[in-house]
Image (cartoon, rainbow, N blue to C red; front, top):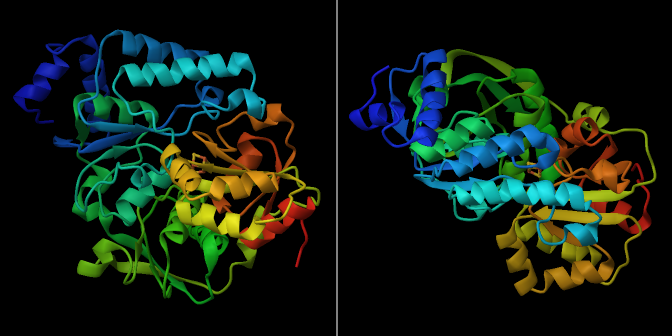
Length: 402
Ligand code: F3S
């Protein structure tokens, strides 16, 4: 692999032991994937934040790394933590968990990482431009950056994204290269797809079918930001998709041919299979979870409209970033949701938070990604449906099949 003089210096430890270790990770990955060179990145987004997932070993690693004095070289944002960093006590998180979680976030902060604690960095200012190279962790953010923004990132792990933040480099392979950004599959959608849950269900089916390949989707007339983020998030969760193209919607598909010769064609005629697979046989709902990926201001606005003047029976958690939370507060949406008994929660979500410790056994959501992961990570039974179905369940405390 060809390294520049500056990159050699980093690898030789001339910029300190922390930078040397970070560059060692980048170069090792480059060798594994036969990269010929490194590429400068504009930003990093770092996953691997919740103490629930990192444990003591991860915490110690981060504190040791931070104590070496390393600093990020490019803008770096942070994925959700295991709790709301301010309201953890009120929400019932244990002090033991909270103390360790705070130490993790502080270690990142010491290294210069912006402690945004959100999986939607593109909604809080870390929004790469078309064609820019970045190093992002968090599968839902990666697929959004590649597909909707037209930026270029591989599916980085927390540690490799951190190494890129510190060195400002990543190895040039995979989705950084033109030839790997062409679609292997053409997915012809032949049914109506409307709202966040339908787009999530579609993504779930596509991810299952294509695994880690690139799909090109046709047959969707319109899709808004929230629907696209839901589509990508579930595709990246049920499969390992890092990039999709959509006819007349995604930026690369608008300017050039993005389908490989001989790409396999698949038709999707209905979404029932996704809804059937992701729904468990439960009726009583302990908590309704909205905001996976983290809710935009529009999503919070829709929830506020639906529950204005009502009282909810089950718990309702809307998870979002601090920036969107502040905007929701400014618009008076928080008051409406709080008065109905719901909560807008920052910094975390129902997958990375230790919700099993909070006593939740059943969860309803409009996110196919949440419905896929919550049973595995948080040991809950799940109901998956539209936002309207979820809010009805929050108000009545039970799930009603239509
Ligand atoms: Fe974000 Fe958690 Fe969903 S990190 S994408 S809200 S599982």
